[in-house]
Length: 56
Image (cartoon, rainbow, N blue to C red; front, side):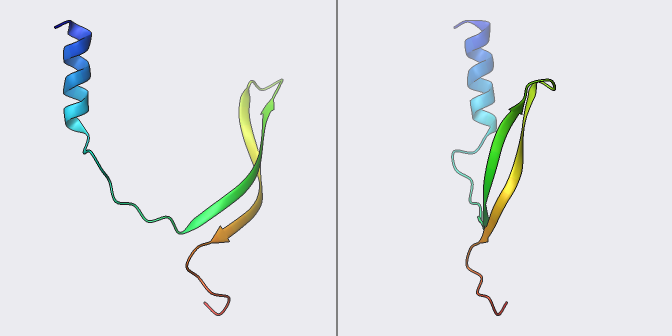
């Protein structure tokens, strides 16, 4: 086995196969690349909270 193969196998052993997460909101964004800046950024259009009613 190559060195990169050994390293890859060791890295895979470090992470769990599954992770439980809770998603409580979703964001709708307008993503764009700043030509002069050279990186991507975004503007938040809307945030949708999940599992929350208006009374909360």
